[in-house]
Image (cartoon, rainbow, N blue to C red; front, side, top):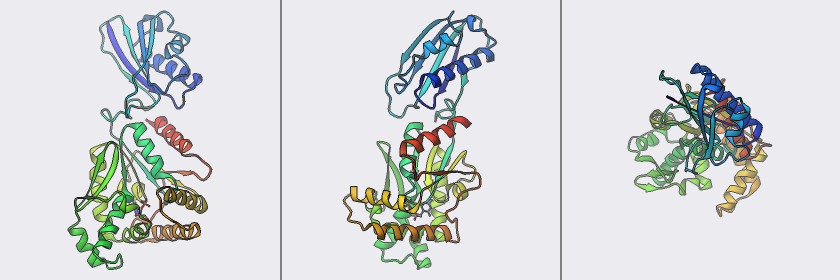
Length: 334
Ligand code: DC
């Protein structure tokens, strides 16, 4: 008896998607193992709990596996599990080597089976960090907010009374920088000189200072080194300005996420108000334009779309739509 494993994913929980994915998976599994559907003694399926619209076993019967003993069950809800996933175990006569089949990202998206990086670049307020966070959770991989690292450098300079215009003084600070990124309960914490500054670096005045200090070569060199080291160790989604162009030009997936200035200003306004900051909308709009200018015109690694990055304009899209779009793109190509 041979036990052959397989898995696939669906882009959405619809009967059509499930039928198509199960049929593709089982026919591929049968073909690669030299089996006819009727030679599969048992087809045991399971699905993640976000699949509710059709039993995968029913889809298997419709796909021609009606002679097999069919069974499907829902998997427990496990934090960080791959979303919208269907797994199968096929039992068939014979003792040849089993060719296991993983389709539509079900293999590569598992961090224990394949490592990959997703670069999400774009201007502030484009929604990329919210998207990156959700995407990383759904794919069960690390999320690295690289902007937080530049923000920490800006905070360090401000605390030391060093102006971002004074490059030699900033370079001295960088030599002695004690910055680390830690993860607790899946959330990124930015630790500067032994203190958790994750809240402080979100202050509005740190935003502009981060944009200025991030133009300096001595700062970028240090941050890019840290980012590459983190990305080399595990699959991750990185959000920033230069991930696809400079930090990880070889990233497997690259997206440039943007939106119009008024849309971005409104989002930042709502976000800051929700955090209790008092903000003036038009000042925020001006600040966003100025930050864009700084980030786009700096000499080193300016904000721009990598030639091979897909442009995603989120002006008229909800966060859920952007996440679903990007996840679909990833699943199509792995
Ligand atoms: O994404 P953010 O707003 O937290 O980033 C703060 C600043 O840091 C931003 O104005 C530009 C800079 N930055 C950068 O130059 N490169 C990155 N990879 C990320 C951020």
